[in-house]
Amino acid sequence: MAGAAGSPEKTWSSRTAFILAAVGSAVGLGNVWKFPYEVGAGGGGAFVLIYLVFVFAIGLPVMIAELLVGRRGHAAPPIAAETVAAGSQRHKSWAWLGWIGVIGAFFVLSFYSVIAGFSLSYMVETVTGRLGDLTPEASVKHFTDDIGGSFAIVFGWHTLFMVLTVFIVARGIKGGLEQAVTYLMPALFVLLVGMVIYSLSVGEAGKALQFLFQPRLSDLTTDNILQALGQAFFSLSLALGAIMTYGAYVPRDYSLPRSAFIIAAADTAVAILAGLAIFPLVFQYGLEANAGPGLVFITLPLAFAEMPGGVIVGGAFFLLLSIAALTSAISLLEPTVSWLEEKRGIARAKAAVWGGLAIYLVGIGSVMSFNVWSDVTFWRGTVLDNIDFITNNVMMPLGGLGIAVFVAWFMNPEAVRSEVTGISDRLYKAWLNLLGFVCPVALAAIFFSVSGADRL
Ligand code: PFF
Image 1 (tube, rainbow, N blue to C red):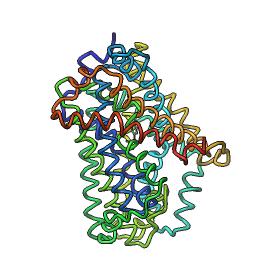
Image 2 (spheres, helix red, strand yellow; image 1 turned 60 degrees about the vertical axis):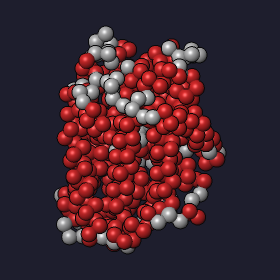
Image 3 (cartoon, rainbow, N blue to C red; image 1 turned 30 degrees about the vertical axis):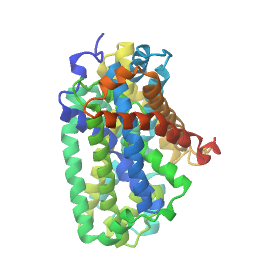
Image 4 (cartoon, rainbow, N blue to C red; image 1 turned 45 degrees about the vertical axis):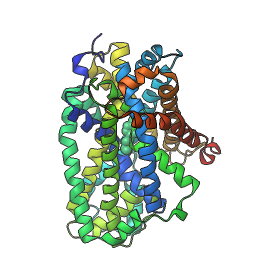
């Protein structure tokens, strides 16, 4: 079959390429935009602490399981899940597990691209000095009215971002994805480290460190805890097809637990570094740490406007955010494209264009949620709020739960052991216990959470 996952062009050319691509998927808006505002709103250190526990005790085991299903099934998620299920003890159709991934990634990308578009827009505006004399009121107005309020602006940047994403994915695994991450990931790292050094040296480093690393457990609420769990999953790109699809391209001799550990550690390091880049400036300029989703787009530009050289620092920051978003977006498009390629026999470039176009069109609903449809609300809010809710609170926990239960309880145990190499028997047992007992309970908690259920 043309472009089937088994063909040599559909494997990573090196371990480094795979790790870079997977870290690229994991590191995104979730780390640089969402994590800092959730820490800010969640009270700081206590949120960070519980987040770390969730990443390593719950996210990491699920990541190993998801990579495993992808690699063993060696195909786009629905096909992979079905193939692996066919070889398991109690055969049942598990294709739905893959479908949650493909459909989830499709819808997440539809609004992810819109937020990434804001980042591109802010990058240009900062560099051209248009945000040079901002007051707090003007910054709110700028975000909600001047940028968000204009359909043409949000739509235009969404278009550009989707074109970039499609362009990379159309060029294939080696020519597109690998090439892109080889340049973009080091650039991202340099920009981030530069930002952190700058912020810690000119900003309120002490306050920021205290805020991030001195947990006051009394700050934790059930809502916070569930938020941290959901964030850990989103940030690690779990249960939405991306990691399963990337797993399909992993050669048999790479150790999945080791790779997953590196990916999770790198993703977490970037989230913490993003916090270290942002909070010293927030405290230095007397801004609100708990500003919510507007932290990066409304609060931070105030600091850039005031500081010397803010045009460069701010421009670099939004470039960093845009790069992070792009390497995640390609992993959100890949599940759809690999399915179109493998199941429908459509050539990659065409599959990328058609898949990207469909996502782009759905994304217009999210574009309009900021302007012409900002008053059109139902169930959870705007179109964007609804898509966000369904993907994050319904599909993601359900997909994660399915992966954990399938691998721990339904797959042939010898098959599982043969995939999970490079760790001792003790660690293997610990992994299996976390996957079979702890992860399902945690994921069911997000799914049935009071905050989620009463909105259903
Ligand atoms: N992990 C990405 C982020 O933190 O922004 C978002 C993401 C990418 C979620 C891919 C899910 C996914 F499958």
